[in-house]
Length: 175
Length: 167
Image (cartoon, rainbow over all chains, first blue to last red; front, side, top):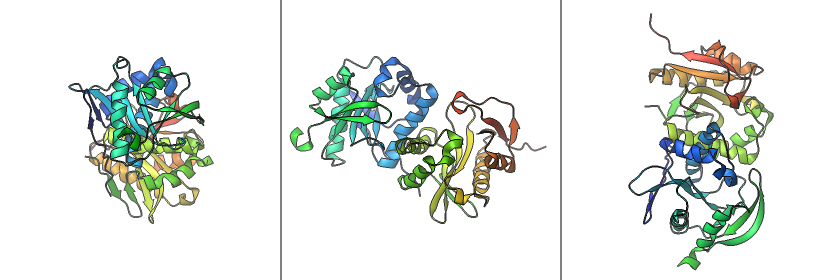
């Protein structure tokens, strides 16, 4: 039996969301080695980042959905990783976003997040969606707010510690 | 081109699938995972299995799942963490599968395939107290070297597999 790694590519006004690939590793590892990754499990050494990038790709294989590498149109360099996650140990399906250095402050997380959420509702037919946010990560909470999500409940994640679960508007509220 | 499926006398070797997660998780949560940094939690096991599946997508090769009598019983094959030489790995998930030569059979088939694809050499890392695994390394033709282990696998012995060069 052949296992297909079937991640679709999404397009927004300014961005392309595509499956992770090996050439994304340097940008991905640089972000996860930096202090900016402190809210999402970092900083971590390059060997750990290789394994987590492989995890991102493998989530697509095991779950049939996952997170996309975000690029600006016309430039295939990875500027972030955004999408749909449900690893073991998460309370619910989640929309997660990490923008790498230099990609913040442009509304990209909101733009890519909206496309990923539309895919969850319109293609996967999900009926609800959450985002897990470190209580000290104000930038991420601001993105969640711009996407119309609101704080729902607290959760203790095995690796991330105490986090907040924010809930997105459902598909019927977004029409 | 690395094959996605291989067959041996008693095993089918194929890429990881979602249905393997329960058996792999049971292994990760058991003492058997102590030779590779475990035991691990259920959440860690899922992440590790994602990484095993995603490795294929990133590298174009990866570890195969050994399927015996229809059930996944372990994994075997190349692991390429960085730009260095890929590592040959094998693990039987359940002790009940040990002692039958299945890991040796699987590792031999994978190494034969990789050699046929012109892979010149692989490293193997094994903790010194893992006698069963060291025996397999020797059986498939690996020789021990004095190379140091990487930081993420401290204390491990290093073996090398080399493709035979015709005289």
